[in-house]
Image (cartoon, rainbow, N blue to C red; front, side, top):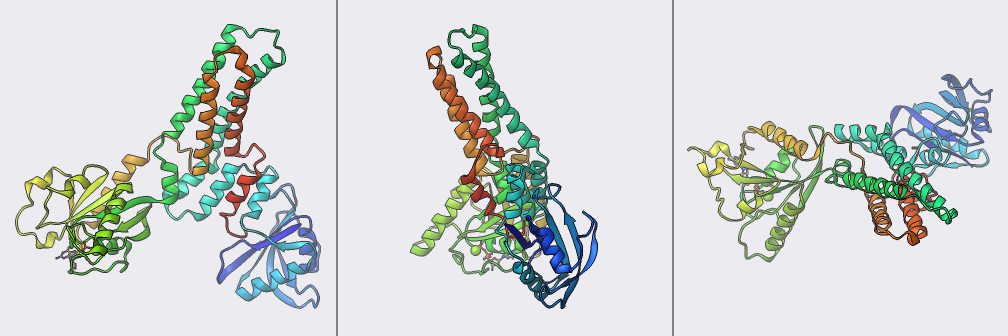
Length: 443
Ligand SMILES: Nc1nc2c(ncn2[C@@H]2O[C@H](COP(=O)(O)OP(=O)(O)O)[C@@H](O)[C@H]2O)c(=O)[nH]1
Ligand SMILES: [Mg+2]
């Protein structure tokens, strides 16, 4: 089957690129241009015609990539047309008239690249991440994985397990030959070493996943402190209702933001106070839950009336920045009680010190999450395979009796398989679907 799709974004653009991959690619180009194929990888201006009537559709640049030296490994072509909706539709209609050509499914080009051995699974995922990266650190993370650092690491660990496995299989195949004692020790040592390395990778505070999905920041605090005003200020628009009526915000409002290069999901929550109102009480419960699950809390209080004896103390205990708002109304000095919490004094009304707050947020996230260590896990899928691998390795290490060797070999085989599944070294039809469906069409 030959597939085709618009690879550039939808909507009007100067140039749009339609990609074709499969055995019919050369036929499609010849028919559309009524001409010979261009030289491989040489941008060539051609007229695109209606296949049946020879009527001109557009003038286009054609790029011809004969397989296997192409992204998918198959014969491929790119048609660069003018990016109008009607042009794109007309060209696609003409391609569909060529037999055995159909519109590509989401991620199908990259899936072919994987199936034809052009890229491994981690690289395929990193391409998806790169395409959807909205902030600088998301882009940097995707590029790191794309360069193959983590594939290398996972492959090395897998090879180590395969080596141990071959020792053990030799023992099973030739049971009369006793495995020398020091070989046995080496097997145990090497597999514990792999186990330790994987546990270290797993102990990463989920930084990779958090960068992909966004840091969770909860704005919490008493009513009327300026929490909704802060959300609006950070997101540069009116997302939450600001009012002097205490208890206005009840539902949790969430906004995805690029905070100076950091992907964050900020939620504004109901102000915390003793309330008799059932709906407000529910909102307050949601606030506290958000605070608990957040990577960072912005505890907003009014400069004049902050009381740190009750719930504020609890909120400020961990992963929190104390934000003291309404500095414009402050006549006297701040309560010395406050200075023990490394606070930021702002005024949302006068737009004062917001930049200070943003850099404090960034510092906090950086200190906590961005370690020097290479980030290896960027998806829950990777984590699950590693956790399973750890389980099998533990089962293997629990077996001390030489009689149990064949069972031990099976544990090691399963552990190796789990590592292989991360990079895609195992036949993994079932995981492919879920990965490539995340792509958009034309990738
Ligand atoms: N004077 C002053 N008023 C503010 C400031 N920030 C917010 N407000 C006012 O405080 C009231 C409560 O703000 P809001 O954002 O709704 O607080 P929330 O209940 O914590 O969400 C509104 O009337 C705002 O206009 C500030 O920096 N200075
Ligand atoms: Mg509010």
